[in-house]
Image (cartoon, rainbow, N blue to C red):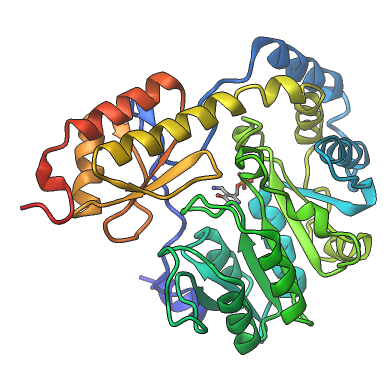
Length: 377
Ligand code: PMP
């Protein structure tokens, strides 16, 4: 029998694929989706949009997704920073957009740096493109000899690590998954300036959930042709199943991505349903405030229960103070609540869902015995 591992590319042997469990549970709070279903009026428009394009499915889609680009640019512009259609790129989820970036600017003999813990797919996508991954660290400040929160990233630390690695691609995740906190723009600007040959990617998948006064890196794009801001319709927009992610950057950088994408990568139905959803932006985003309130409730309640939640600008909360993440993950699952073990000892991550889902999660945590808490016997 052929051993597939022997046939596989050497650098992929023994690796594990992305694998957030997809379990059928009453309360699924493990992949940072928006728990609210697409409202009926939007569903009607989506169905009509698919019907309108169905007869033309014998033809390939618009390779340049021109109309969708225009709509995405208008959406970003409406959220406060003027962005033109020529500055927009899109893919089947922002994961594909990240893949295009690494295909174009990473690859064999090149390095990408991210600050761990951050989004687990950044190193995985780097690996698939043969890009060498450099694990930058948070919570260390070489100048002050430490200090700050365990997951904080200071300007000095970020710049020192970037200068040492001199990477070709840098990932900044803001708000950061899995820790939840947004970066200040001075870190983005300093990292950009410290890495003259790098494409700097700010992954803003959760931007719409940020606390007031948290500006987007979109405001830094002007005059920085190596800076990229990625976004997605999967989170605040409640459209994870639609698979539409996008980015904003300099038109020349956007143009370069056409070299690596598969022709016609965005299907006609994908373009049509994304445009239909964007026509209802206000409705699709109406749940953001409700979700943010649940996030803040999670932080407050877990603190009261003696746990250690990390302040969050996203639709999820990372919380520490657990004796053993895996044991508590299983105990919550036994109560029908699925959260995420992100591989950080003593921590778990929970998505802020509906008020009812949040109550189910908080009740399940409150019912945990003291032996689940760190430092208890
Ligand atoms: N970036 C971050 C930080 C994420 O957490 C996720 C999804 N978990 C993505 C990108 C990718 O999401 P999608 O492909 O659905 O846009």
